[in-house]
Image (cartoon, rainbow, N blue to C red; front, side, top):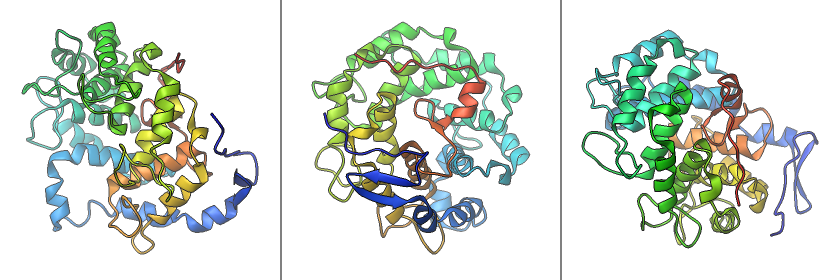
Length: 344
């Protein structure tokens, strides 16, 4: 497999197949201050349809916004104490967190809540025993995890459970071996992974499955060459990545695809500068933020994953992000979490 390009952070330029983008030129194109302003303004206008339509997933939205600021080395601009108090107000007696106040607990939002509290250096406010007991209660006999008491099974929840427990230092609360075995059963002939055994391969699920297996130290279930080829084929002529064959490009796959390639050490299998250019084209040069593709309306979800993609690509001026935990590498190191990325 040929190397489609590389970024050397020690050099003054970003090089791919003879073309270069000077780092100074990147800084001129990258709307750093506008993106900070975009995130800081997210919670100010509560009259919009979008604000109320996203009420149920506010916890994840707070995580996305905080990570945007963390990647831009501006986390201290956020109202720490106010956010910590709000997160804790979303916790239920069973230990789980809802997506907002008075919303039912779910694994998706429990992970986001733990990530937010860890990001804000508020780990001491987490009742680790209660949260880990909630997560463990959702593991099924086959090793899979339900998202909540209603019983939906999805490999996203396997990732949420293992990531959450790793951040809490409570991996022994569940059967990690069985959890990895279930994820392994979701691998398809193309090397990808689906939501459940037999489900279609999808880049979002692949991130969840590869991340879960990395945390579980069970990368033997990943065929990195076959999966790497499937993932690099997600790049379209415009430079953007899609989530599965015959779909449109979307900035969010700059994270879902790149994270899995990063874990496997195969980011160089795609054209990195072309992807970087696609993300930059999706910026809103009036209000800040990044959209799913150029010309569309920016939102915090795509802003975060666009910035995360640029960080993984090695562009200058970003906090380094861990491709497994989706958290700053410095925090993962501080917690003593070591992930082995070896694959067969």
